[in-house]
Image 1: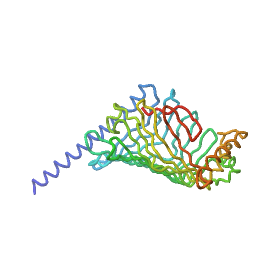
Image 2: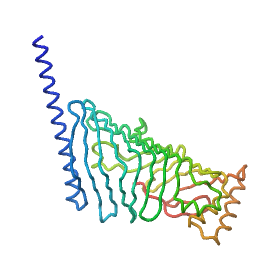
Image 3: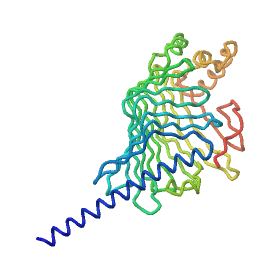
Image 4: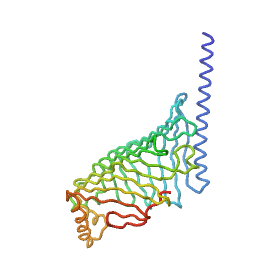
Length: 329
């Protein structure tokens, strides 16, 4: 009995020592990340880094985070960031962000109000810690910009999951439901007959990278070399948009491939493009006639079927040239 008691005490001591060593390593690593960013001329501040949860969890909390790159024009502020991991599986972490974040990009500042935003990041427990899965979930989002626009979202889900084949491939998922565009935009679109809510935006795709997403990614710098869209669609009133297809890096690194797109009730499009400022009103009749000719080639003339084709360094959307092909690597 005494030996068992001694064994329990020794095991508890070793486990506690492991926790304190892990907590110190986490706190040190976070502090070094902020210091490294500041040394590179970026804004990187916080008001406190603490690790709790002894003995079975590492609970990291960083308060009043501000990260920004004045030269690049981006920034991020959050009241706090919480990251959790069980001590016996530190390769699976959970994170939470509060309401009241601020994102600076494209010359404007956007405030994000929401229920707590949660994320799960899981790696495979090997030496290189290759990414297995990332899942992000957010509810009741309200985005307010200092450029006088707002956007509401009921639910948003995003995920990245590692695929077995081909090498360095990942399945991408996105589902956003009940999007409420800015009221001023909806007022501009009144003559299109579109409702003030977009019920669903959905994406199911596979991405292939030049290197795996693992702890060496900072050195290998994975780049996109292939994208396959199994299903992408937007449902908005009578306007339904669908897309599928694939693009891959050619020998010169430029994208090659085709994305087939289908728009149901396409006759809304000319008015929509004018109201959004993409097409001048005087050009709208020409655009409508061109789309009508294309739609006449399908059995259902209410459906517009066109292909986005990238080939020989150039991108065409149906008969319309768009510009140089994007570079994948």
